[in-house]
Length: 92
Image (cartoon, rainbow, N blue to C red):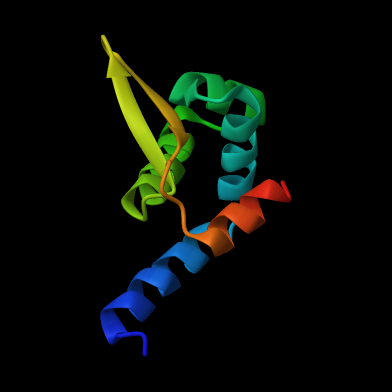
């Protein structure tokens, strides 16, 4: 049986994916392999601030991971995504 803590984590992940801008961000990162906030914002025609907020939410639920190189952070899909999230992302 799944514990309440696991249900909460699942709920947060589903809510994070239930936004077209966050899905678009994931799509860009999937296509590029990794991207910086600036590159994603430019491609999606979003402000850096809005893009950064969406990325932070995706990072908080462990859908994205960050790698800092100098002053820039590059984001990629986490290596340990649950199967249901991987299935959703594969359809993007």
